[in-house]
Length: 98
Image (cartoon, rainbow, N blue to C red; front, side, top):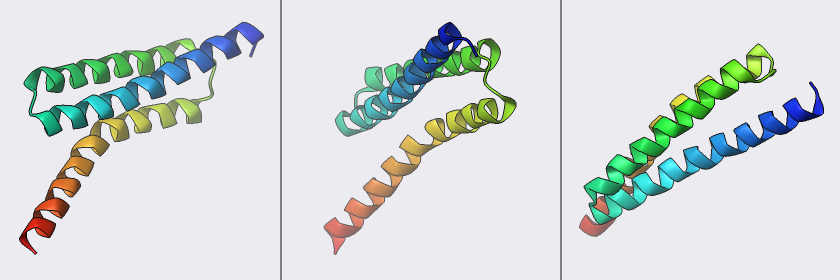
């Protein structure tokens, strides 16, 4: 891997993580505030995250195992915020009742 390839790959991976985290943050704020526009925005951020994942898979010299990790991580990024939000809601509803 050349120096330029390493820099490009690192920047893409950083953007990949930042967009995944932004999706989760905006998703949580959207549910907390009940703002449908933010909910839509969270999925736009996830779509951008997916585009960066495709760029990583297609355009970087990473080995197949690392590219597979990017695919699996993208699925996890999509699933984690709804699961976490549901868990927090149930936990707080239980505390309010008890």
